[in-house]
Length: 332
Image (cartoon, rainbow, N blue to C red; front, side, top):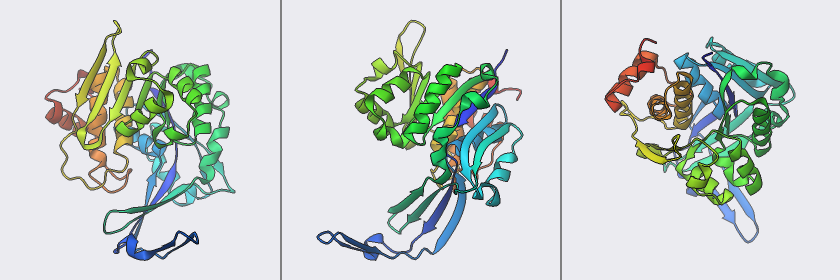
């Protein structure tokens, strides 16, 4: 049986992006001796975007319309009112399986950018903190139908609980701890790595994982099939072992884009491409190259879920970047 179902775990959040036409330095007063702080920032622009790791990944999977997606998470009373539910429901290949907490708000990230590109960020977890209570074992009756689950960035407790449950359900896992990596205990991090098939993160995150777990890449590859390292404008790197246990390191360039507007969510687009490639039974290298292609569409618009593309756009950009088109992409 060809498996086409993937499970997406992570955060669902609203991103509020604001602009400040001054320098934060001129708007802040700090008295270190008295531990006093005062800041008044008047934003001149404000935009609301749909975001969160799970939401961003799922959105790109929806545009690709190849994998059948089960999207789990915890959201608040504003999730439907502010349009996120309908935004996800536009895709017929996404099964939205969120717990709604009417006494809480959906997670939100407030970001203010000044004229020097400095950022002031405030994050409110809200209903996201309830993800640790989700029982996948109760919600999933057919675990054998899932090709992969991606366990993406949210609280350490939620990611740990999901890793244990996915292992018990025997659903292969892509582990994506992201920026919360420093919050993991060494022993917990190692246990989850041992339960994973693929480890993914940016260059800094992978280095932090190695430092925190006190493991080399070679040692990690004794437990996982591949390490995928995204490196922004420097592309990405696939590190994997073949059937003979030989280790390969392959650099994957970024695709040429029309214009870079906003890099927010590009890594989540990469993850969606990787999952789609694996769903199509591509090899891991072609799957990562597909990830690079999907990530390139994300940077061409502002916000992580505003880009539009179809499979024909994907095929064309893949060929223009790598001088070939995988047979699995033909005929879709």
